[in-house]
Image (cartoon, rainbow, N blue to C red; front, side, top):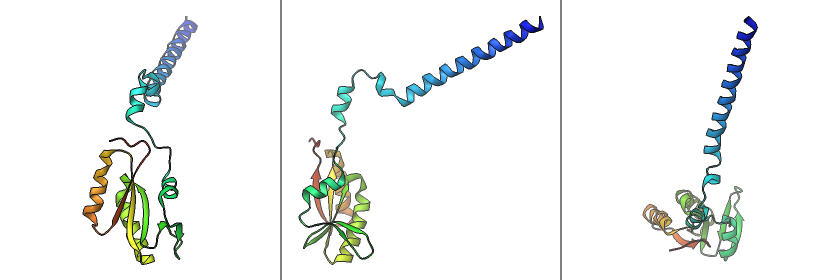
Length: 149
């Protein structure tokens, strides 16, 4: 009798642990791989396209000066022309780009400029922020290859 009670408790414990693992597995699969349950990925992919190019690729494509010009303190200007010290950056990093452009301008004696890389029309708000923050910075707008009006 005692032996059967112990076996019953073990079976309950094993069943509880198995059920617990199943529940954990379901929860993890819902949070880790939700796209595998989505049958209509084409719509999602058409709306949000990531650029395969990096910031440095845009510097190489558009810079008409010295790329990665190194200053005495070992910082690097993305693009140094006869007129501008240009910082290239993604639109969402607009505030950082202002600071870097101003610093590079002070270090080189060139005018400050930012080349802002925008992925969609909604990111133009960042360009407006730069204009408000410092109207003396030259802004070059670069649209990614996936940009659509």
